[in-house]
Length: 404
Image 1: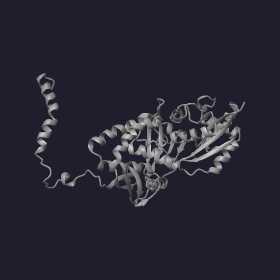
Image 2: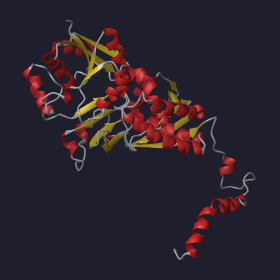
Image 3: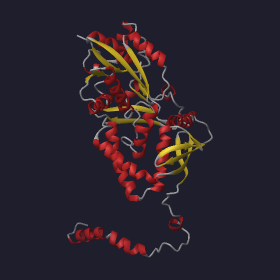
Image 4: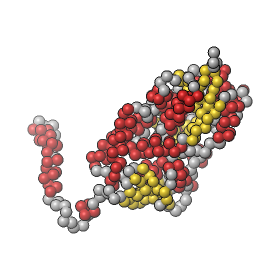
């Protein structure tokens, strides 16, 4: 009987490095590994060599950075989706693009199962598995963290050391991190106590702290067409090059640090620090352009949609019909979100410094405080009387019944 083929989501980090030998020790199988290159410049030769040394039959390193940006980041940014008002969803929308490519490889290689290194406490297990269920419900899913005897990251390190597997962390420097072109997340260690201020000098990897940012402000201009960024500082760049440019610009100005306690899907609160330099700038610029080009009712309703959209992405429901339907609504709203936005970056702050659009709804002739002949201020009296009638009726009722 042929051995079962298991495809492992592989990063070369602590979790996935030890999962390869663990699978071989506990299943009659061969293990194939897949690493998704999501824009961080992975060392393909190193990853493949390490995976094979750990016992994998093969390792596929897939460049999905541009797909990640155009098909996952841009739709979420256009929606204005921010989880709980702070988190720009960097890990959340990276998981479905990786899992989607895993499904494609699993089908091609004849695999019957997909394995991942997500813990039973986290959100990523849901994101991986819901993608697999949506795209290949016939595949079995193996989640070692939910079934093995290992209980902590320290025990993982001991397991790796016993098998001669090099790992990129020690028991003294053991933050749980996830990096892609959009962000870098940090969890664990001293961050597990929300009372502790993050040790930014030790923690930050992509950027400087605001205190170490330059004393002079830096300006950046982003051009959008239908909600999609197409140029920065007058340069037309492809999506990957543009995000790298924005990352480096925002990072050196200390822009893009988020420290938050969030509500995980599984029910617990967790604390994380996120570095999202370019993403912070993109969201800010896109919002400024929407404020200029969207009418009030559409903008306000889109804000309601944004919250639900963020939940769907965070909860791993990327391929859910509701997320896809909301994305269609968002695309309709973006038809006039075209123009340029200038931002001022200074010591962790990202401030608007002017915006323009051929579809601008701002009419200086109407909005001016100077004399004009297009707005009759007397009209406001009747408007307020009609608009305020319901509250006046309630007030009269309270007065009649001694409730005031």
